[in-house]
Image (cartoon, rainbow, N blue to C red; front, side, top):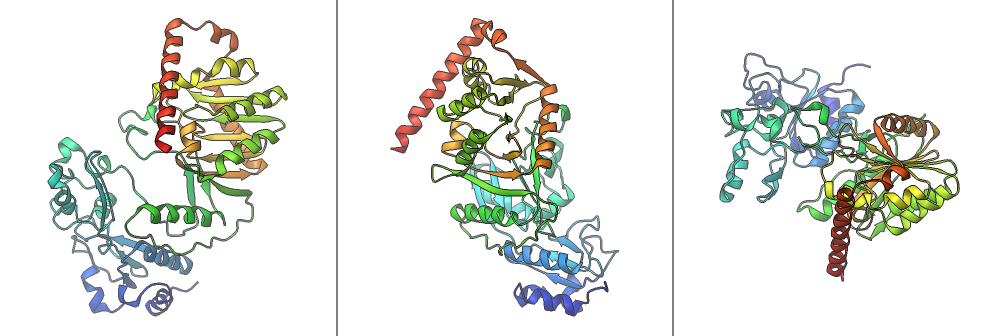
Length: 434
């Protein structure tokens, strides 16, 4: 495949983004030939200055299709050569994506676009007595996107850490637009402690390819447009089919408006013939779900629960869930508690059907939260998930009906107390909904 010329790339990009965000003349591109390390200079094929996220996606898709490499640039103040263009590539400059989306003074967080200046963050929160700690010497001009890419620091980093220690979440657009990840993993230091890697939470994520990606993008854009001040404006995704892929779909639960996850789960439990292996971080199930699981065990189905052990971020939720153990164990269910670290995965395996996502299968998730899961109906995937379950069972303690009946009064008191708290919170929630 011969190299793409500047004229060809310009013609392709003009079909999907405005002409005025594209620079193709040597004179117009000259200011972008290097970053702060001016010893090294190189003009790219083209410079793009997108003004919205949708334009970034179209640019990346076009470059991926044509085989054109992309270098992303912020303000260009770095001294590492990280934003040096490639001769046969496109330079993607994000300085026009400079909007601070929202500020939450109570939680000391802000959501913003990659082109926002470092110092502008501190200026925006100064009225709340706050500031953004990482302060490179170029903070008056450098952008937060460049800071993330280079893990910038400054004087304050001695006390508050580098950029990586002050960023809770990053949303990425991949150049191919053909891959997504679903699961319940959090992007915080609590989930993966930098100083204690052995205590990172046990998570499960699934990598997704194929036409179902369009459903994930549509759901994401739907949620964004409902709550954000500015629409996301993403172009419709049209990912190609995967030759060796299995059947799958996206299911959603949303505050009683859509109950796809719950309906699908109950249907699969009822249909199961061999196994129902159930993993969740917070197990406070509805009466209907408990009944379906007990009925399945009564039919001779291998029903197992994989739940967190003593290491958990919400001990109260764990104690409340343990109030259900006795009746479930007597109904024939097997219960395993994962002990090495906090178990935060959300996965269900019913025969060859799998669901993985953000839903914890407790009352809050199933009735009130916005949750999304990827369902897969595929024997090969089911086999891989079953092997993952088996490995987790090997690192768990199985609770038996006999041992459970002998637990101490202190344990029983904590279970009773947190069960009362859970019931009270449900009553309060129901009253507010009336």
